[in-house]
Length: 141
Image (cartoon, rainbow, N blue to C red; front, side, top):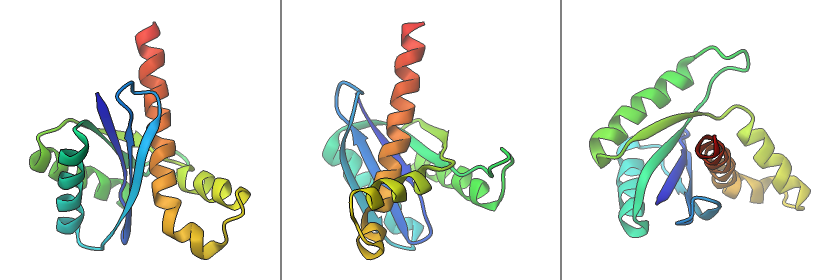
């Protein structure tokens, strides 16, 4: 089954999709739009194109674990995705993924301008890998 991770942002939304074995993030991209309806339309197109069967949406909790306005926005977007795609949506704690993504890209020599174009896709891939790892560990129990 293919699983899509979504790092929903104000202007850029990172997308990562697993391979069929649910082991690796095999595809990633960024949707550049501030309009939620455009983001949903693009997500629906990518779902159809790649045969995605499950969604994982970044849930930006505060560092102390509390929920703020960004988490509330993500929860509301999850409801929209459930209605628009008929797929299950898992909210996934995304603390530190963007920071880690910046560090990975900087470590690979990308300057700030280049990082800005891809950081959201890398953050989505990190979320997806965390989610896939948890699923694998749960199956092994």
